[in-house]
Length: 293
Image 1 (cartoon, rainbow, N blue to C red):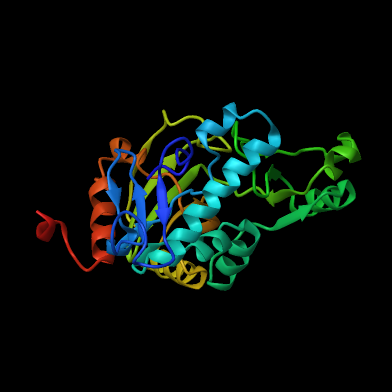
Image 2: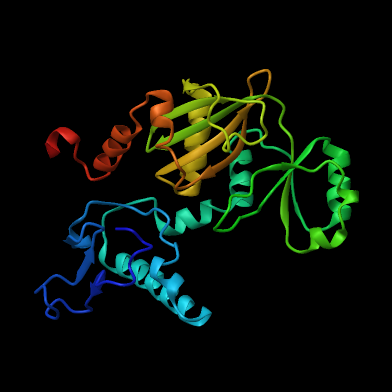
């Protein structure tokens, strides 16, 4: 069910009592992207991925207030209905997904789990940033949360004193020590199974250019244990983790995206991530692909 196309068609219905409505005892009906009506009560697993998107139709609404109403009511209805009707396995639970998306919180959890994490400052003070840069040396800056729209890539901040204080004060940003090295790891965790890719590039942020060496990366046992500990403490059943390897091979935790992109790695590494993820979803319901077929 595409969470940004709820508006503009009869996408969902929920009844407080089972003897009401057009579907007899079915209290909830959701319309899939293909127009098929499904009952969440009958589902064994639910992949809760990015449900807060704005509605496509809302872009054509007449006023800011109207757009806000459409977007908020669609989000609220979907989230509330599923919370009331669905009783299977969440991938991952909404409250855990929201909490784990907090990059500040997850850094603290990763550090407590045994990972090395970059020295980090969250601030909107030029004085604090200047002192931090002097202490840690080469420093990068990136958003604390970010926003919909064009991506804001990770950047260097070499001379904070040359930037007006007002620019810092607009909103907080994340300042981190730069981790030396050119080997980045994208680690996909589907339950207890992990599939990682090694991305080799001299660029600070590897995302804009995937025309670089990318290969499968066997996940060492200690990394596997630390990642499992982090995800367990965050309450996540899945997660897409970004690590960076120092020149001597030490993994450094950067972040986990509770619902990160992973399918782009399938053609680049040859790893059948679609099948792995399908197996993971089926295992959450206690079945397998063989039983489905």
